[in-house]
Amino acid sequence: MKKLFLPSLVLAALLGNLSAADYKVVPDWLKLPEGRPQLGNQHGDIAISSKGEAYVSVMDPKAGVQVYSADGKWLRNVENAPSDFHGFVIKKQADGEFIYGPRLGGGNILKLTLEGKEVLNIPSTAIPEDFKVKSKEGKSRVAMTGMDVAPNGDWFVTDGYASSYVHRFDKSGKYLKSFGGKKAPYNFTTLHKIAVDTRFSPVRIIACDREAMRVVHMSVDGDFLGVVAKDLLAPAAITVQGDYALVGEIRGAVSVLDKEGKLVARLGLNETKGETGNNSLEPAKWRPGFVTAPHGVAFNAAGDIFVSEYNKFGRVHRFNKL
Image (cartoon, rainbow, N blue to C red; front, side, top):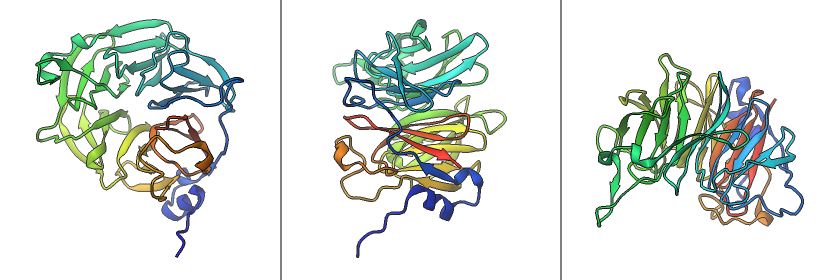
Protein backbone atom coordinates (compact mmCIF):
# COMPACT_ATOMS: atom_id res chain seq x y z
CA MET A 1 0.00 0.00 0.00
CA LYS A 2 1.35 3.41 -0.93
CA LYS A 3 2.14 5.60 2.07
CA LEU A 4 -0.02 8.70 2.35
CA PHE A 5 1.75 11.99 2.96
CA LEU A 6 -0.32 14.76 4.48
CA PRO A 7 0.69 18.38 4.03
CA SER A 8 1.65 20.13 7.24
CA LEU A 9 -1.52 22.22 7.39
CA VAL A 10 -3.66 19.09 7.44
CA LEU A 11 -1.44 17.50 10.07
CA ALA A 12 -1.76 20.58 12.25
CA ALA A 13 -5.52 20.51 12.00
CA LEU A 14 -5.57 16.84 12.97
CA LEU A 15 -3.18 17.14 15.89
CA GLY A 16 -3.99 20.44 17.51
CA ASN A 17 -6.95 22.25 18.95
CA LEU A 18 -5.14 25.61 19.18
CA SER A 19 -5.02 28.31 16.55
CA ALA A 20 -1.23 28.42 16.95
CA ALA A 21 -1.11 24.98 15.33
CA ASP A 22 -2.48 26.14 11.97
CA TYR A 23 0.18 26.88 9.36
CA LYS A 24 0.56 26.85 5.61
CA VAL A 25 3.61 26.00 3.55
CA VAL A 26 5.31 28.85 1.66
CA PRO A 27 7.22 27.09 -1.14
CA ASP A 28 10.35 28.57 -2.75
CA TRP A 29 10.34 31.38 -0.21
CA LEU A 30 14.06 32.15 -0.25
CA LYS A 31 15.39 34.05 -3.27
CA LEU A 32 19.15 33.66 -3.70
CA PRO A 33 21.30 36.53 -4.98
CA GLU A 34 22.35 36.61 -8.61
CA GLY A 35 25.34 34.41 -9.24
CA ARG A 36 24.71 32.15 -6.24
CA PRO A 37 23.08 28.90 -7.42
CA GLN A 38 22.90 27.39 -3.93
CA LEU A 39 22.54 28.81 -0.44
CA GLY A 40 25.68 26.99 0.70
CA ASN A 41 26.81 24.02 2.74
CA GLN A 42 24.50 24.29 5.71
CA HIS A 43 25.27 23.01 9.19
CA GLY A 44 24.08 26.08 11.02
CA ASP A 45 21.07 28.01 12.20
CA ILE A 46 18.51 30.70 11.45
CA ALA A 47 17.36 33.71 13.45
CA ILE A 48 14.90 36.53 12.77
CA SER A 49 15.65 40.15 13.63
CA SER A 50 13.16 42.66 15.01
CA LYS A 51 12.74 43.95 11.45
CA GLY A 52 11.65 40.50 10.32
CA GLU A 53 14.86 39.86 8.40
CA ALA A 54 16.15 36.28 8.32
CA TYR A 55 19.80 35.61 9.18
CA VAL A 56 21.04 32.25 7.91
CA SER A 57 24.44 30.68 8.62
CA VAL A 58 26.35 28.44 6.22
CA MET A 59 29.90 27.10 6.00
CA ASP A 60 31.15 29.69 3.53
CA PRO A 61 34.08 31.97 4.50
CA LYS A 62 32.79 34.66 2.14
CA ALA A 63 29.12 34.47 3.15
CA GLY A 64 28.97 32.78 6.56
CA VAL A 65 25.82 34.64 7.62
CA GLN A 66 23.43 35.79 4.90
CA VAL A 67 20.53 38.18 5.43
CA TYR A 68 17.16 37.92 3.65
CA SER A 69 14.20 40.28 3.78
CA ALA A 70 10.82 39.38 5.25
CA ASP A 71 9.66 38.36 1.77
CA GLY A 72 12.77 36.26 1.10
CA LYS A 73 14.92 38.59 -0.99
CA TRP A 74 18.67 38.51 -0.40
CA LEU A 75 19.84 41.75 1.19
CA ARG A 76 23.48 41.33 2.19
CA ASN A 77 26.08 39.15 3.88
CA VAL A 78 27.15 39.99 7.43
CA GLU A 79 30.69 41.30 7.24
CA ASN A 80 33.30 39.40 9.26
CA ALA A 81 30.77 36.77 10.34
CA PRO A 82 32.42 33.37 10.85
CA SER A 83 31.68 30.36 8.70
CA ASP A 84 31.19 28.07 11.70
CA PHE A 85 28.15 29.50 13.48
CA HIS A 86 26.59 26.11 14.19
CA GLY A 87 24.05 27.82 16.43
CA PHE A 88 23.32 31.50 17.03
CA VAL A 89 20.55 33.82 18.19
CA ILE A 90 19.59 37.46 17.69
CA LYS A 91 18.58 39.48 20.74
CA LYS A 92 17.42 43.07 21.05
CA GLN A 93 18.90 44.75 24.12
CA ALA A 94 18.68 48.23 25.60
CA ASP A 95 21.87 49.22 23.77
CA GLY A 96 21.01 47.65 20.41
CA GLU A 97 20.34 44.41 18.58
CA PHE A 98 23.03 41.76 18.43
CA ILE A 99 24.04 38.36 17.07
CA TYR A 100 25.27 35.91 19.72
CA GLY A 101 26.90 32.63 18.79
CA PRO A 102 29.65 30.13 19.56
CA ARG A 103 32.04 29.11 16.82
CA LEU A 104 32.00 25.37 16.38
CA GLY A 105 35.54 25.15 15.04
CA GLY A 106 37.06 28.28 16.55
CA GLY A 107 35.87 27.56 20.09
CA ASN A 108 35.18 31.18 21.00
CA ILE A 109 31.82 32.82 21.66
CA LEU A 110 30.93 36.05 19.85
CA LYS A 111 28.63 39.01 20.25
CA LEU A 112 28.32 40.97 17.01
CA THR A 113 26.23 43.87 15.78
CA LEU A 114 23.82 43.01 13.00
CA GLU A 115 26.35 44.55 10.63
CA GLY A 116 29.10 42.22 11.89
CA LYS A 117 31.12 44.47 14.21
CA GLU A 118 32.61 42.53 17.10
CA VAL A 119 31.35 43.67 20.49
CA LEU A 120 32.53 40.82 22.71
CA ASN A 121 34.70 37.75 22.14
CA ILE A 122 34.92 35.10 24.87
CA PRO A 123 37.78 32.62 24.27
CA SER A 124 37.39 28.94 25.09
CA THR A 125 40.10 29.38 27.71
CA ALA A 126 37.47 31.16 29.84
CA ILE A 127 35.89 27.75 30.47
CA PRO A 128 37.61 25.75 33.24
CA GLU A 129 39.51 22.66 32.13
CA ASP A 130 37.38 20.45 34.41
CA PHE A 131 34.44 20.89 32.02
CA LYS A 132 36.26 20.05 28.79
CA VAL A 133 36.76 16.77 26.98
CA LYS A 134 40.32 15.44 27.01
CA SER A 135 41.93 13.53 24.17
CA LYS A 136 44.17 10.50 24.69
CA GLU A 137 47.10 12.88 24.41
CA GLY A 138 45.67 15.00 27.21
CA LYS A 139 44.61 17.92 25.03
CA SER A 140 41.31 19.57 25.94
CA ARG A 141 38.69 20.70 23.47
CA VAL A 142 35.27 22.25 23.17
CA ALA A 143 32.78 21.95 20.33
CA MET A 144 30.02 24.39 21.20
CA THR A 145 26.81 23.99 19.25
CA GLY A 146 24.23 26.49 20.49
CA MET A 147 23.31 29.21 22.94
CA ASP A 148 20.72 31.67 24.16
CA VAL A 149 20.61 34.86 26.18
CA ALA A 150 18.43 35.30 29.27
CA PRO A 151 16.37 38.44 29.96
CA ASN A 152 18.98 39.56 32.52
CA GLY A 153 21.70 39.34 29.87
CA ASP A 154 23.35 36.08 30.99
CA TRP A 155 24.64 33.79 28.23
CA PHE A 156 24.06 30.03 28.23
CA VAL A 157 26.22 28.06 25.80
CA THR A 158 26.11 24.30 25.18
CA ASP A 159 29.18 22.21 24.34
CA GLY A 160 27.05 19.73 22.44
CA TYR A 161 29.69 17.94 20.39
CA ALA A 162 32.11 17.43 23.25
CA SER A 163 31.14 17.49 26.95
CA SER A 164 27.38 18.24 26.80
CA TYR A 165 27.95 20.82 29.53
CA VAL A 166 26.18 24.19 29.57
CA HIS A 167 28.45 27.14 30.32
CA ARG A 168 27.01 30.32 31.85
CA PHE A 169 28.47 33.81 31.48
CA ASP A 170 27.19 37.20 32.58
CA LYS A 171 26.47 39.98 30.10
CA SER A 172 30.01 41.31 30.39
CA GLY A 173 31.43 37.92 29.38
CA LYS A 174 32.52 36.86 32.87
CA TYR A 175 32.40 33.11 33.38
CA LEU A 176 29.92 32.08 36.10
CA LYS A 177 29.50 28.31 36.16
CA SER A 178 29.02 25.08 34.19
CA PHE A 179 26.42 22.34 34.61
CA GLY A 180 25.08 19.30 32.80
CA GLY A 181 27.29 16.64 31.27
CA LYS A 182 26.98 12.97 30.55
CA LYS A 183 26.70 11.68 34.12
CA ALA A 184 23.68 11.46 36.42
CA PRO A 185 21.34 13.17 37.01
CA TYR A 186 21.65 14.64 33.50
CA ASN A 187 22.87 11.66 31.45
CA PHE A 188 23.08 13.79 28.34
CA THR A 189 24.10 12.26 25.03
CA THR A 190 24.42 15.20 22.63
CA LEU A 191 23.07 18.39 24.22
CA HIS A 192 22.79 19.95 20.79
CA LYS A 193 20.96 23.30 21.08
CA ILE A 194 19.25 25.15 23.91
CA ALA A 195 16.91 28.06 24.58
CA VAL A 196 15.91 30.17 27.54
CA ASP A 197 12.34 29.16 28.35
CA THR A 198 10.61 32.44 29.18
CA ARG A 199 7.23 30.74 29.70
CA PHE A 200 8.16 30.11 33.34
CA SER A 201 9.05 32.34 36.28
CA PRO A 202 11.88 32.13 37.03
CA VAL A 203 13.00 31.37 33.49
CA ARG A 204 14.43 27.95 32.72
CA ILE A 205 16.71 26.32 30.18
CA ILE A 206 15.03 24.04 27.65
CA ALA A 207 17.44 21.81 25.77
CA CYS A 208 17.63 19.21 22.99
CA ASP A 209 19.26 15.98 24.17
CA ARG A 210 19.42 14.82 20.59
CA GLU A 211 20.52 11.18 20.65
CA ALA A 212 18.32 10.47 23.68
CA MET A 213 15.37 11.67 21.58
CA ARG A 214 14.20 14.02 24.30
CA VAL A 215 13.77 17.67 25.31
CA VAL A 216 14.58 18.54 28.92
CA HIS A 217 14.31 21.39 31.41
CA MET A 218 17.03 22.72 33.71
CA SER A 219 17.06 25.66 36.05
CA VAL A 220 19.42 28.51 35.19
CA ASP A 221 21.52 27.33 38.14
CA GLY A 222 21.83 23.86 36.67
CA ASP A 223 19.23 21.79 38.51
CA PHE A 224 17.78 19.02 36.33
CA LEU A 225 14.02 19.68 36.34
CA GLY A 226 12.82 16.82 34.17
CA VAL A 227 11.91 15.63 30.70
CA VAL A 228 9.61 17.91 28.70
CA ALA A 229 9.03 15.57 25.75
CA LYS A 230 10.44 12.20 24.68
CA ASP A 231 10.41 9.82 21.72
CA LEU A 232 11.05 12.67 19.29
CA LEU A 233 12.90 12.27 15.99
CA ALA A 234 16.29 13.38 17.35
CA PRO A 235 15.55 16.95 18.50
CA ALA A 236 18.33 19.22 17.27
CA ALA A 237 17.08 22.82 17.54
CA ILE A 238 14.70 24.70 19.79
CA THR A 239 13.27 28.16 20.36
CA VAL A 240 10.48 29.61 22.49
CA GLN A 241 7.92 32.30 21.72
CA GLY A 242 4.75 33.08 23.62
CA ASP A 243 3.17 29.89 24.92
CA TYR A 244 5.02 27.53 22.59
CA ALA A 245 8.35 25.80 22.10
CA LEU A 246 9.36 24.99 18.54
CA VAL A 247 11.55 21.91 18.06
CA GLY A 248 13.44 20.94 14.92
CA GLU A 249 13.90 17.16 14.72
CA ILE A 250 16.83 16.20 12.52
CA ARG A 251 15.24 12.92 11.47
CA GLY A 252 12.41 14.61 9.70
CA ALA A 253 9.90 16.77 11.58
CA VAL A 254 9.22 20.09 13.29
CA SER A 255 7.11 20.01 16.45
CA VAL A 256 5.22 22.70 18.33
CA LEU A 257 4.95 21.93 22.06
CA ASP A 258 2.79 23.67 24.63
CA LYS A 259 3.93 24.62 28.12
CA GLU A 260 3.21 21.13 29.46
CA GLY A 261 5.24 19.53 26.67
CA LYS A 262 2.20 18.32 24.76
CA LEU A 263 2.51 18.06 20.98
CA VAL A 264 0.03 20.49 19.43
CA ALA A 265 1.35 20.39 15.87
CA ARG A 266 3.89 18.49 13.85
CA LEU A 267 4.95 20.22 10.65
CA GLY A 268 6.87 18.95 7.63
CA LEU A 269 6.83 15.30 8.73
CA ASN A 270 8.90 13.26 6.28
CA GLU A 271 8.67 9.47 6.44
CA THR A 272 10.45 8.69 3.19
CA LYS A 273 13.34 6.31 3.82
CA GLY A 274 16.75 7.79 3.10
CA GLU A 275 15.59 11.41 2.95
CA THR A 276 16.00 12.36 6.59
CA GLY A 277 18.81 12.79 9.09
CA ASN A 278 21.53 13.45 6.52
CA ASN A 279 22.80 16.42 4.53
CA SER A 280 22.97 14.89 1.06
CA LEU A 281 19.45 15.12 -0.39
CA GLU A 282 19.79 17.05 -3.63
CA PRO A 283 17.41 19.88 -4.64
CA ALA A 284 15.77 17.80 -7.38
CA LYS A 285 14.30 15.57 -4.68
CA TRP A 286 13.06 18.33 -2.37
CA ARG A 287 9.31 18.53 -1.83
CA PRO A 288 7.65 21.71 -0.54
CA GLY A 289 6.55 21.34 3.05
CA PHE A 290 8.53 18.18 3.78
CA VAL A 291 11.67 18.64 5.84
CA THR A 292 14.73 16.41 5.68
CA ALA A 293 17.08 17.36 8.53
CA PRO A 294 15.95 20.39 10.56
CA HIS A 295 18.95 21.98 12.26
CA GLY A 296 17.72 25.49 13.11
CA VAL A 297 14.29 26.91 13.92
CA ALA A 298 12.90 30.40 14.45
CA PHE A 299 9.68 32.37 14.81
CA ASN A 300 9.05 35.85 13.47
CA ALA A 301 6.86 38.34 15.31
CA ALA A 302 3.74 37.11 13.52
CA GLY A 303 4.39 33.53 14.62
CA ASP A 304 5.49 32.26 11.21
CA ILE A 305 7.97 29.38 11.43
CA PHE A 306 11.35 29.21 9.71
CA VAL A 307 13.45 26.03 9.50
CA SER A 308 17.04 25.76 8.31
CA GLU A 309 18.23 22.32 7.28
CA TYR A 310 21.39 20.31 7.68
CA ASN A 311 22.02 20.13 3.93
CA LYS A 312 25.15 20.56 1.82
CA PHE A 313 23.21 22.57 -0.77
CA GLY A 314 21.38 24.77 1.77
CA ARG A 315 17.63 24.93 2.30
CA VAL A 316 15.24 27.05 4.38
CA HIS A 317 11.54 26.28 4.91
CA ARG A 318 8.78 28.68 5.86
CA PHE A 319 5.41 27.86 7.39
CA ASN A 320 3.09 30.88 7.77
CA LYS A 321 0.70 31.04 10.68
CA LEU A 322 -2.90 31.43 9.54
